[in-house]
Amino acid sequence: MTSMRQTAGQSFPSSSTLPYLIPGGLLLFVVPQKRITPRIARVLSAYFEDLKVRRFPADEFQAFGQIVIAGLKKARAEIDGEVLASLTQIQTVDLPEMYRKEFSFSIPAVTKDFFIRSSEFGPDEFLRSLRRVPSGKNRRSVWSRKMNR
Image (cartoon, rainbow, N blue to C red; front, side):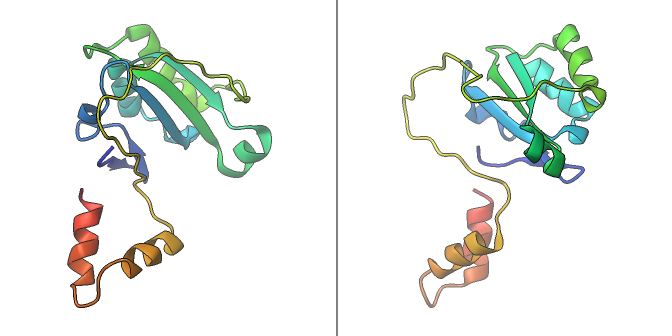
């Protein structure tokens, strides 16, 4: 994915991200449970099917409140009313806990190069990236280009 739109401090799949995921492609969305807004629920219900929603194991969930939403991209976007209704209630639902090897999906074969990118960088990763910029180059413009790929 090359970019993510920000809402309430959290990223979510958007029109700038969705074109990079082919129909049948797998979405893994890790987000705090309380950040699932009606808008995010609408996007997920329109573009993804076979959605599975689980909370992190007890210790991690208690610390961060995160959930995992996994699903396959639909060939054609269409809001599924039942899924939308379910997703809009996620903030108040006691979700089942995720366990190892729970999710199983059949996904399309990779036919070209791809990459995975986070929309957030920690301080160490930021410094490593800056050190890779050749000396004499304007580090600010190089870093800006990297962030906007």
